[in-house]
Amino acid sequence: MQLNFIMKVISFCTIGFAGDAAFANYQTAKAFLEKKDYKNALIAAKDSMENDTRSLKLHGEIHLNGTGVSSNASEALFYFQKAAELGDAEAQRITGYHYQEGLGVESDFELMTDKVRPYHSHPAFWAPFSLMGDGTALN
Image (cartoon, rainbow, N blue to C red):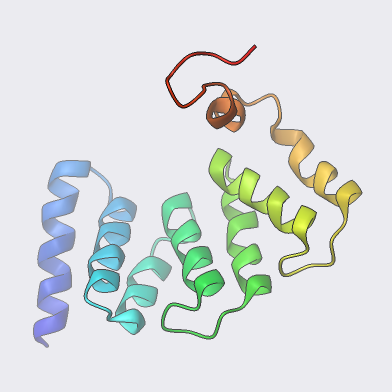
């Protein structure tokens, strides 16, 4: 009973600042993770997985790292791919890495390039590679 109240308060406060319920669910899930309440973290993240890449990636990380669940790279890849399909550049890179390294799937460079190629034109895909550690552009 008290847990549901806490979830609603966190959601209400977050919605007031962020403006969307998906972000509130994500923040609630992160709060549960910090408290090591993995069951409720998964429930909170699951509430916004249909359209929120943050929650999808969080689910992927939970399954990849085995945080409160058995580590399962295939399950993690499923969530990262869904986030990639919604246009999340980080999830696109992670998905490509899974195919390259064979995490949760058989290693397949050709399939990896097919999975990642549609996102190459998106500027956010290349952002982490465009700057050196000191902020200067790579040539």
